[in-house]
Length: 76
Image 1: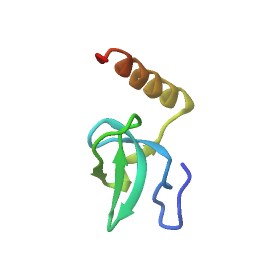
Image 2: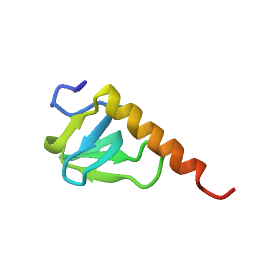
Image 3: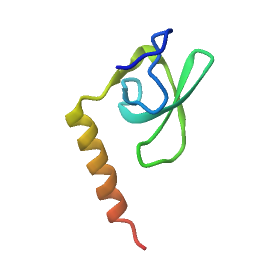
Image 4: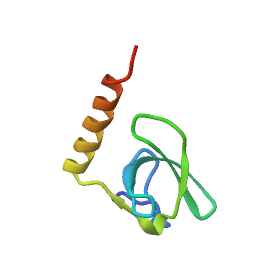
């Protein structure tokens, strides 16, 4: 995981939030929390940086494919 000087993942990095069992992209840092947003966009949530881990390349690909599949099933 790419980390800044405080051990917090960098903005733009895709991570797994162990507290919520969700994947998100780091959008920013406020106080002791990291703000994450789903890979396809949506509502941000606060996460404890101690419960985040980087995604493996396979996990990232799987999450991106799942998001694309979900979008393709939405009515137009």
